[in-house]
Image: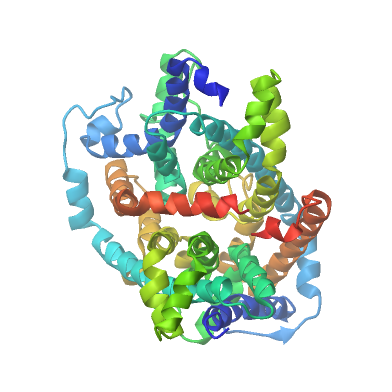
Length: 276
Length: 288
């Protein structure tokens, strides 16, 4: 494209501005969370901490319930991830690789579920889970999170499954593999970036969910991170050091996950989008 | 078929059945969960429609959706056009641009409240230093500024996803079209108007629909920052419904409000598809 001929300095300036809008708030969380309490609320904030302290992180781990919330979030997110990967991989395989009547309609219905508003489902799911005596349990959150993660995961897997030649499956069938062996030994390894994308998406969906977690969980011991952190915000005197350390610590696992498999995730979004 | 069944059964139990029970609930006199349950016909609906808080909440939801739609579209187009330029580290930038979308809302809430605050908030500090304002701005203290601040916060979270989707759409537009236009001496603006925009139409259609459905439902960011205040100025429909169901313990009435909102949203969806669905091509493709 002819934009390439333009002044590279302007190009890099534009890229800097866009990335600044994205990244600067995160920089500000981490930079501020390492400052002394007095420096945090100073009327003349500095870009770098004048002196680095880990006291807010230490407070977070020792004098708040953060470790409990963290453990709960890990359990809920990991379970959501495993169930979502299992359900959506098998469904995507069925939908994209095995022709059967009504396939397209079924696919569209699953996508419809994906755009279904969560706030509409909040009240009836609350009533339903309460009838099953599942309120205030992590099972309730896992059930809900899988519901919101799975439809999009099926869509995300489409691009990856579509890129695998059918000949491979035929060869596997000739060698006497059944469908389960074909799926697990041939297709899943080849679509592994897609499966990784789905895993990261399911994990993040669960890690960030607030609305259902705030209603379905009653006791402090079962809270997940978003609701737990929100509870700290709600306290009478806002301890910004503690909150910023909480925000930083909650974001860190996501950043680490993203360093490992973020490019597959965005590739999945990009390739899924091309077929839009 | 057997492979798809577990997911379908799961979704039937957690989406289809709850929708059915929501509609049933809206005709019942239920307060706190586990109590009451007499059939009261349309009484819940009559009550909701007569509430002084109902129509303004619908209006605020409309303002919310329009504000977010416009701001996110503008930001996403700018970001996508920039990230589509050739530059070193482009793949890296395209990966990390999605970051705001994948962090918990509560983290976004903490950082923005922190940045927009009046004690050491970086935004106020910068504005004061540059002499753009004379005194600190209370970003959440008046109705209009609270709504504006919330729209900005929420747009910051969601425009990265839209950016990626637009980038994906841009990739599917053939380079040869741009080459031909360059030969004809078309300006960058004309190329954007006559090649990029039409090429993105199917993508924009899906994003317009899905984005609207998502943003009308946003609850957490509003609830966490303002709780619907000051004096209900940011109380959109989801906040109103949550308030009725879980703070006032009127489940039946809240269910009726949710059904009414769903009807309005469905009407919008039908009209949107009817008037704006890309024509000519296989319409199925637009749903993918």
